[in-house]
Length: 73
Image (cartoon, rainbow, N blue to C red):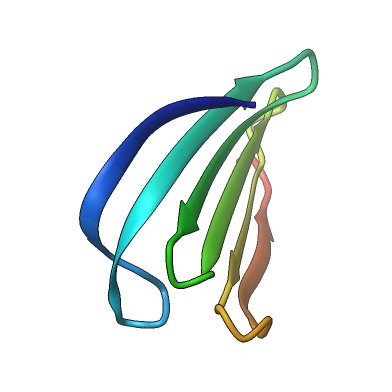
């Protein structure tokens, strides 16, 4: 996965302001976009070639805040 940029003072899923690293990766099955926050929170979005999208957001304490799959219409 390639780093696409670093950002200062982003709002993390836990509500804290934290620096973040953004990554994007493309392969034959899906596109993955991942954000890692300095506080330890993480957000992962995966877009599949059929148009469906999965989203997972993890709090820095390890608690999964969002884990969903939205199918293409």
